[in-house]
Image 1 (cartoon, rainbow, N blue to C red):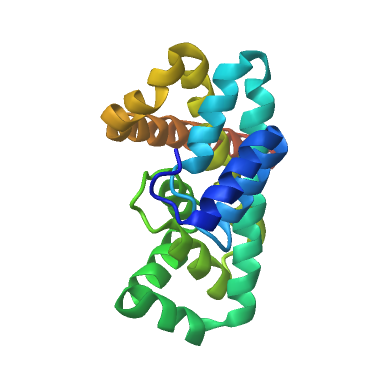
Image 2 (spheres, helix red, strand yellow):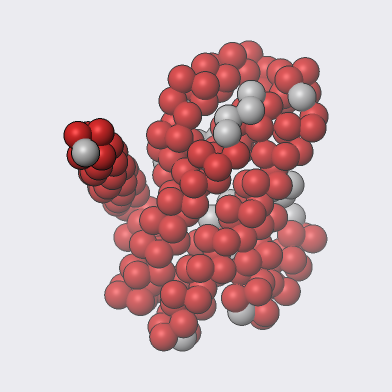
Length: 204
């Protein structure tokens, strides 16, 4: 699990793994904010869910909450740092990130949060903060994406055991495409329901 991490990060992961769900929360928060632990939160979620399948919902909730709060923390850091710092960090891609988050808002953040590594999701988070994407819209998009991701990983862990991660690795594009389609359908359905409700209220 820790082979690609530096020494101090391996110690953090080992410590977090021994804590159970609080450790998973901590790793997810750090990974989504100021540090990077590639795939480690998924591995911890899988490992803990295999050991105690009855607590999978708790573990997935801890990973989701930690990740969402980490993203919100990074959002506010970017908001405070400003555009100049973002331009320096993102380089030539800064304008692309700006246009993407400003033109796509909720849906753009949602899709980018669902895409697998090596998608540079933190740049989307930074852009959302710098260019003042509404906090509620940003947080909602990240929350939906993380719920879908971590509960899907937890389900696969309970169902397939130690083969969950290899399964995700082999079928990650298929899984991501299915998740995006599912979320897209849900989003479209909610929009349609709200539209029908407004039309009905207008008539009365």
